[in-house]
Image (tube, rainbow, N blue to C red; front, side, top):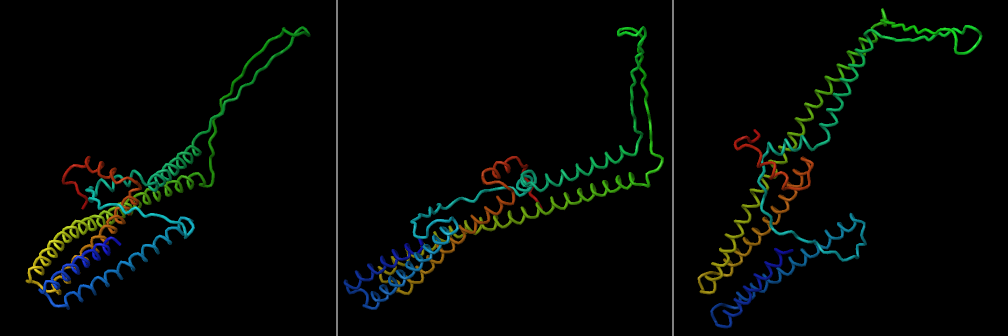
Length: 292
């Protein structure tokens, strides 16, 4: 909606200039009429933009469970400078923060413990038993004698039908499968973060480029308006310059939202919520160690 407001203000300024030059006899009535049409079109664009904003607000209120008639204000964040991050730092941070590798590592440990238990079941089994004997002499308490006997027993199953060995092999297979799953999972996470990093880098480049385009379009419109006031440019030149500026502003708005979405997707892939954490992590990465 901000772009529509700026376009309307620019159209009104050109209308004012055309009317002043017409009063001075410098331009025909056609210039004023053309400027009036541009103002009317800009007003229609503003109405459409306002309707679109209200539609977005209604959708947002529905998602939040609010009454659709409740007034809310959307705080539009100012233009932000793209953050500079290192791809390897993003991947390393994701592998530490994501829960999936931790769960897969636990599966490996469980399989290893199962294998150890299965091995223990195939070894010797030791048993220690103790017997206490007491004889009563003289028919009363406190007399007689007592003795202890301790027996150490060792046993080993001669045959178990291969069940123990089967349990060991099964546990080892499970461990190998868990290790393979962990390796694949790390590759998947690395690729996911890498793709998100590339998308954010591309969005950041477009954000900077569209900002520079706005500066060029604003200067171009300023020059054309000066030329028009001096009688060296036509209304068509002014209209074209204004249309180019409107397109540049629209592209920058779209680039801003695209960058914010790309940044959010990268943060989600890394499993953090603060972009500064990525920047801090990047400082610890040696130069020239960019992920290939």
